[in-house]
Amino acid sequence: MRVVIAEDLALLRDGLTRLLEAFDFEVVEAVDNGPALLPALIKHHPDVAVVDVRLPPTFTDEGLQASIAARTAIPGLPILVLSQHVEPLYARELLSDRAGGVGYLLKDRVSNVGQFVDAVRRVAAGGTAMDPEVVSQLLARREPLAVLTGREREVLGEMAEGRSNAAIAAKLFVTEKAVSKHINNIFTKLGMPPSDDDNRRVLAVLAYLNG
Amino acid sequence: METGDWVRAGLRAVAGGIFAIGLALLNPPILVMWLAGLLLSPVPVLGILVFPLVTTVVRWRADLERRLAARSGVLISRPYRPVPDKAGLVGWRRLRWIITDPATWRDFAWLLPGAVVSCLLGLITLLVPLYGVMGITLLPLWLYLGLDWFGYGMFWPIHTVSQGWLSFPQGLLILGLGLAAAPYLTTIDARFTRLFLAPTRAAELRLRVTQLTVTRADTVDAQAAELRRIERDLHDGAQARLVSLGMTIGLAEELIERDPKAARKLLAEARDASTAALVELRHLVRGIHPPVLAERGLDGAVRALALSLPVATTVESELPGRLDTPVESAVYFAVAEALANVIRHSGAHHAWVTLRREEGMLFALVGDDGHGGADPGHGTGLRGIERRLAAFDGTMTLSSPSGGPTVVTMELPCALSSPRISPSSGTA
Image (cartoon, chains in turn green, blue):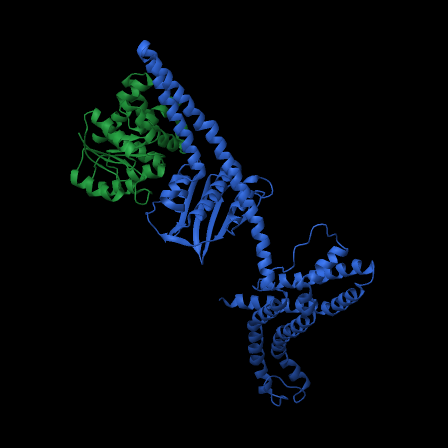
């Protein structure tokens, strides 16, 4: 799989490159600043990009802006955004095109290599990877969620992070059937149209939570 | 302006004129009293007793005039030097404080001319509309008493009934002109007062120095406390965790040959510890300068903050660009503190934030639909906001009637440092 990396700190850039190459990704370009990112994304049209939010020259949010611009130019271009901090506001902006293939994770998550690579693959496949901290902040501010049982809220959280039914079942030690039952209940209680497609369902959940 | 408005403003100014005449009549006796006190001041014992007291009366009178001027839009600050330490209500120190303050002598110089001007202008404000009323009401008297005994306006005396009739529109016109002019006359009076009672340039600078000394001390204290807190947090938090992390990794290194399973477990622990240290550092950074503030400016940071609150919060912002970083930071933390108060105390279901810039002033308003009754003297939160803003010459006002709504208004002078860099998104 072909990857573009954007990260300004050499230590992290090399680390990411090494890590991804160890898992059979091909790093086609690793840029270290904001202005170079958008052309690189458009030129290589990678299977997935791993982008730091804060890049030179202004050290604000040019990584995020370039990602959004790239997805405007190439709809659905899979991008995983990394940051030292996460903001539901940025998650909302990334998700606003509703195209899927989006990830937004804390840099800390890279240390759990297995999960991180899993998230990169999921995003490349058009799925979603939302940081648990974003999801917990989104869950905390929605009052209608009080109608859900504790278990259902857990399942909703896992689903919002972008996990498939199988992954949720494995994580919560229940059967896949039980998970899909919970999911049906959640969709009924929150008045959302049901959907069989995993990716669409995750986007619907995130749109609901962001609403 | 609506018709009703200028009539009301005129009537208010006329009433103010009457009041001003009454007050001006107080000036001569006060002047005599003060001069008597001044003459008595060299007399042992009696002097240091009487003179401070009569000066207090003069200053009370001058303050009253300053407040009156403020009502017609002319702001006059108090020019007096701060009371020195250990100066009682009367006594030698107080006497010296009074005599060496130029404002004392300016007050004295004002007493008589101020009274004359107030009286004159007050009389004009009062008499012109009264003359108008007279013109409107006199006609029946002419019809009853006959003509040729008294005139009005353009006709002296009035010979014919039609001239009598004409006094009515003339009176109306004069009344209108009188009412329209009254507020301006009040303002002229206030301006004249300002010539004497406002602080001189030197006094103004001295007042400013006093104020800056206080706010600087506050800022330095607050900053020192903040640095102490950061030091403690780093020392007990991230630093301690990194030490333990190093120990765990070292132990894993020892065990890796003999007991690979245990080593693996230790490494997993080390990874969790590094995550925990990062979480702590992130919280600390957020407290020092939120990253989103650096990335998106005040506008974006407040929106991001609103999204993370348990109370639904609307943000309206009309900031054309980025503000200076220190101002951004101060206003952000002030708004965050105000919103934290909303969540802790107000019981509100909905809160709102408005950011606006007008004529070099930045306004930040935080309101909620809670139960109100917030007391600025009560918590430390509102005091903290005041202190933060004071460092930038900013102020905070609180309106919180019992039953709500509560609105905190923060304003401070500001300059925009650069045009907007990033676009803003919708409300939370």
